[in-house]
Amino acid sequence: QVQLVESGGGLVQAGGSLRLSCAASGLSFSNYAMGWFRQPPGKEREFVAAISWRGARTDYANSVKGRFAIARDNTKNTVYLQLNSLKPEDTAVYYCAADGTLRIPLRTSPTEYPYWGQGTQVTVSS
Image (cartoon, rainbow, N blue to C red; front, side, top):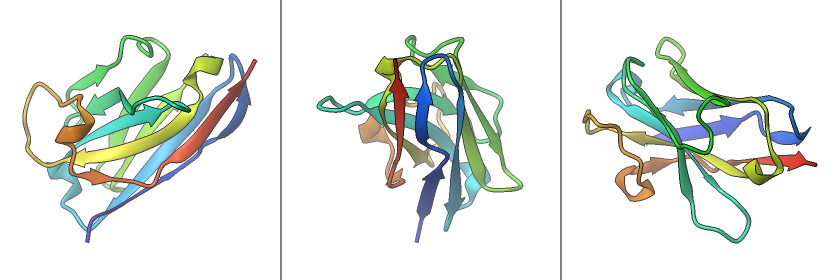
């Protein structure tokens, strides 16, 4: 049974930083591309970042380029999202997701990821 467990969310002031983690189990982690998505209050879930199965390729939403960084540690079955220079509009529930299709370009649509975590809340105060 695939499980993805996010952690690291919280309340932070604008301009601050957070690091989110997503621990995976029940899958061959190094054979899965991983993605981070977020869902702001009252809005649709949106793509944030993705990383290929060995970390060689990454992709970011334009709204977070230069501020967020995705990374993975296949020895720990964990993917990370470093959030810097946070803005109030970054407030959302952040989800990690796994895609086992080993395809490039990396997938950016939520419907293309079969496995999801439960999410972690990030709140940025102004």
